[in-house]
Image (cartoon, rainbow, N blue to C red; front, side, top):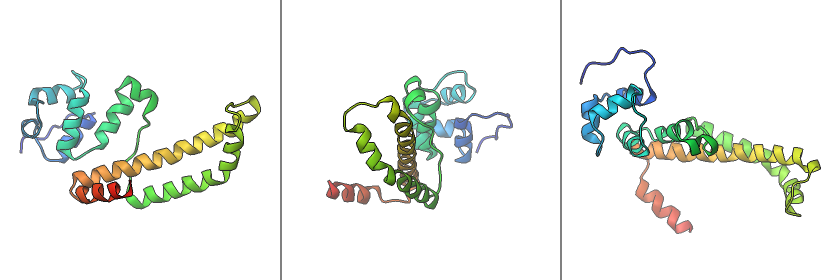
Length: 171
């Protein structure tokens, strides 16, 4: 292994590479079309990574959350529409999901009332905002679970082929 950088304020890309014990050269060998010099430029923020670069790094470093980081921080569209997802452990994700679903369940009747006429009137805004916020929490919990699954797959801790088969059976 090459010399470990002592530079402060390392980028997430450099931290992830180093956590895998890879030099830029070794990482480049494991990626398609991403040179060691390109990795260095990305890590030193001399060039912005492309989505292709990020996918290559995420796969090589076994860190699928790099894709979420890129989309939520570096992409103009993602900045608006993609929330940052924190990597959590499965029990925390499940508890958050259940808590979010429990909070939304009593609000479903009110959501139906609001949506019935296809408009959101001024007197419905407060309730709609609350319901929308709770739905965002459910969505985040689901995204967190999907990211956890991707991480487990990248570490070979989940049989992805079996998971795909079972999902296909469900339709």
